[in-house]
Image 1: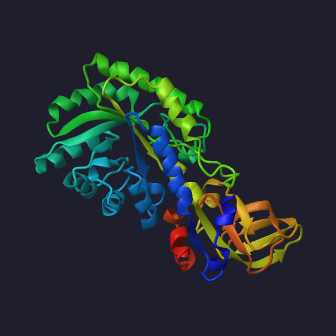
Image 2: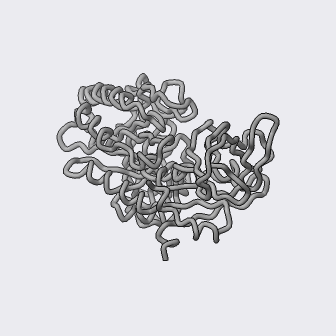
Image 3: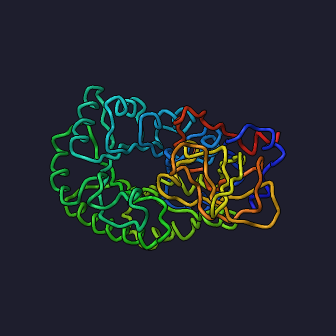
Length: 387
């Protein structure tokens, strides 16, 4: 049980709320990824948008992963963390000129291009530096990810990627663009995908597109299938590491790579979510007319996913072994949406108890805000608290 790894005595000495990262869980997760991708042409880029805590990035860099970036700030953070620019991919529908120039100056592996205007701008900026930018076309495959509509990205109605109906026009442009080189195609259909058949559908679509590009004598050096693999938010103690074996097997079994092609992945949540928890204290237990409220010192400024996505996070009272009761677990923010869970079963809870909101290593600390002029949460790791 991961719960046993919590240094609760140390927690009592730290001002809450704060993030806690169990780096042993992260290392085991990365070991499993590397085990499942060894002896094949698979390359994993960590999706920086999930978490850029420096201690977390250091462990990821040491495991040999590259970086998937969606902003200039993330490109810089990856380079600052020691990740080789030759392993950096840069996606995003709205890359600013300075961000593109940052990528060019650092000779990153690839720009994942999402529109014709972007392709033309990259060509122009690369020409000004007498460079040739390597690009992959992010194609919108119109494949459903069967996930929350806010984090579905691969349908024709979404803002992401180039529609397949526009591919002839895009390919026709390349002979006129001397400062970009097409080296691959890129996809990302969504996040928190637990129905692996969605990835089978993506493989089928990629196989069709491979034939399309081959028929036009376009050589693709790599295929990038994005990320999106989900985690088990309901049972983080029992499923701390996603089933990477089944995930990568989907692509081994169903994707028809051509000779010498490499396959790239952009995993984020599946890498870091389970190693992180938001640790909070109970400020008050309030008896309502028909329910009890456990009011925490953490709010949606610290973990916005429940308010934004109605997302579930398992919650544990680390201080109590008493019989259980139901609580609405809420924060102190002056918004009704500042609710982590309703009718959640916890061990009997009192003021001062330590509460862990689990599976918060992805899209937790990185999305924190200072709304209500609250301080940003600090972060601590298992390594530093063990000293």
